[in-house]
Length: 231
Image 1 (cartoon, rainbow, N blue to C red):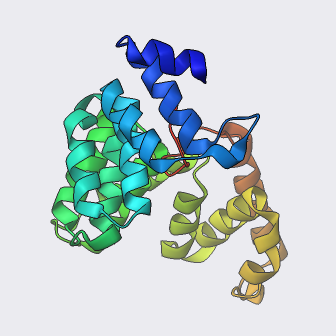
Image 2: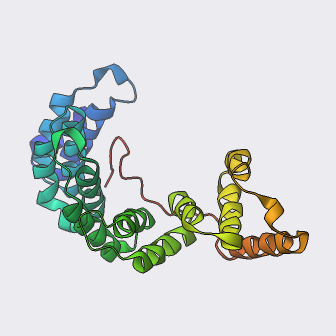
Image 3: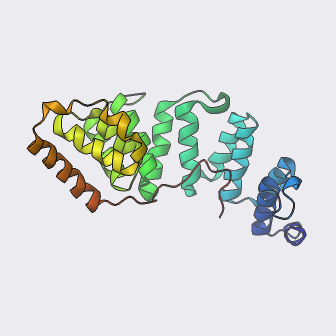
């Protein structure tokens, strides 16, 4: 930490970032030395997208939503993590920032254009399906959910289960249970399997198994609300 601070004092942006990170998390040898004030100071000095993102997370934790938004917007166009966080700030109205669904959609859409992120696809799909602040487009919403689900996004799998009917609903139920086995009893308790013959149920299971085999669970989601984002 002393070496990082010395380099940061000479204008090294990367060292300033990691010094900020050390004070945000606490040095490995002495976690009790955490200091938000020092972390913020080094992040401001670093002038890096990741530093701005971490600084915004600290500001959100302090309840300073508007200040966090201002910091995020400085580098968001080149940093998808910050675009995603801005979208969530506006869709949920975090820390005093008024909800703004059209603006949230714009940020999520930029993330998708940047790297086709499955969580951003899920968020866009929710807004499109409900028509919150934007023109309702259920077909586009379903395409986003299906694309996101193929990359292992459980929220999208649940959404497709919830909006489906008939055999298609049971296919998605099986897919969700495969991804999260602890939901098995809750989901099965919502369905009336007596509506289907044994042959139909076997066909439903086969369809679900084929989908699962074609799209194995992946850890493809970017974790935007982690305590910090490293460069």
